[in-house]
Length: 97
Image (cartoon, rainbow, N blue to C red; front, side):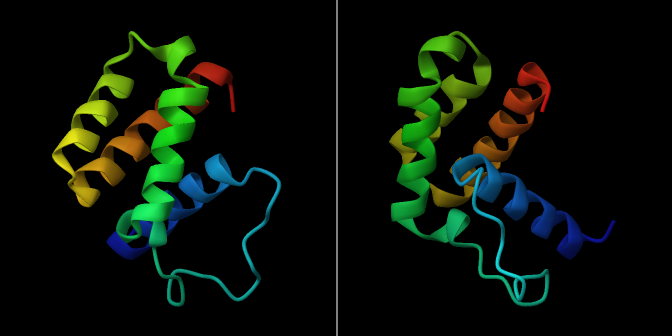
C-alpha cells in the first residue's frame, strides 16, 4: 500500500468513527479528499470529545486515551491525529469492529 493509499485509509477510519452512519461522498477518493480530521480544530475537537468524554470512562486507563489527552494539551494537530488513528484501531479491535 502506498503512503497516499494508507493516508486515505486512515481518513476513512476516522470518518466512519465519527460519522458511522454517513457514507463518504462518491466523489471522495485518495486523490480528491482534504483531510480536515488532521488540520481543522473543529473536527479535531469533535474526535477528542468523542474519545475522551463518550468513550473515556470505558477506556480511561488505556495508554491510548492518555496519549490523546496529553497531545491535546500540547495543541499539536498532527500528533493528535496520529493518536486518534492509534486509538480508533485499538477501539475497533476491542469492540470487534
